[in-house]
Length: 229
Image 1 (cartoon, rainbow, N blue to C red):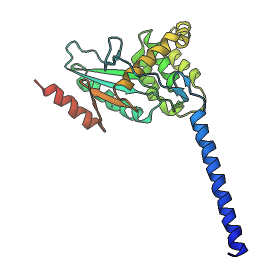
Image 2 (tube, helix red, strand yellow):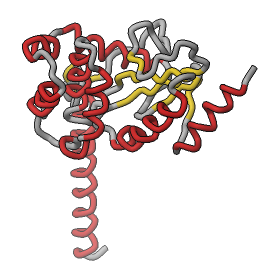
Image 3 (tube, rainbow, N blue to C red):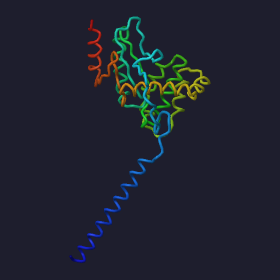
């Protein structure tokens, strides 16, 4: 065997050993890296799934509340999710068409990969405590392009929205910071996880998870249930 061939063989073996060592080191990093911080937003761990999950709870936020509701449509949403933003005008249109017969419900499901999704949900919940959930819900989606996907905190932006909506700011600040507000958001997440929600938006019509892709899809599902005896 030539010296050149022997040298090349040694170099290849050394490279293989180095790659193996790097693979072990990287695997150890993945295995032993610290757990993400609990809570909501980027880097936050999702809570444990609910043991007694419900698609709709008595305190779930209803966007419409008809006297005689025949169908219930539930959306698990993330205010920073572009897909949810795209569905916002679709749901607005459907609410106008079916709001007297269909209950539309919004439930929080901030995704860990979004830096400001958790704080947006807490802002909406703080507004809800002053009876302005729908107004903040709409404001967050209508302005999503202004703050979504940002890597810096946007709490001040959400506070500005609260001021625009005429909220009591002392109460708003206290509610945003209250542990109960974060817990209310997490409660929706726990239900969603137990119900098989893996991303947003996720819809349920009459308690069954569905995958509409458009206004026409969701309208057809609503019509089908309205036509049922």
